[in-house]
Amino acid sequence: MFSIYTIAFNVVKNQFDFKEAVENFCFFAEEVVVAVNKSEDGTLEQFLKLQSTYDNLKIVEAHRPTDSDLQVYEVVRATNVNDPIAIGLPVYTNRYGRMLTSQELKQRGFRP
Image (cartoon, rainbow, N blue to C red; front, side):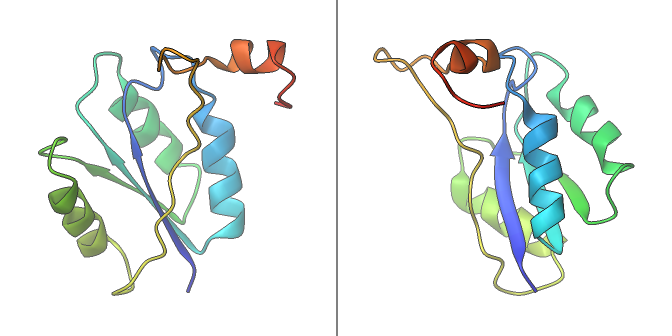
């Protein structure tokens, strides 16, 4: 089984095209688990809505976003396998470390 694990945080506020990323993950993997950190913009609610669209998508609310080991433990507990393959959503930043929005990526020539 091929599983994907990733973390989401403030994706709505930062205008990240997370729906397309989730669609791609769910197409390729038999199981996709997203740990959603406490966000300021309703990220958890948006991912929970997506969960009803995909049978292979699981959403885990991260209880301690600063503790990455705990997040991994929570996700592994939510998966069907003992050793999921973990990858993250791609994050592109400017030279100052600010995450670029989908619109900014398009302006730089990235395909949607």
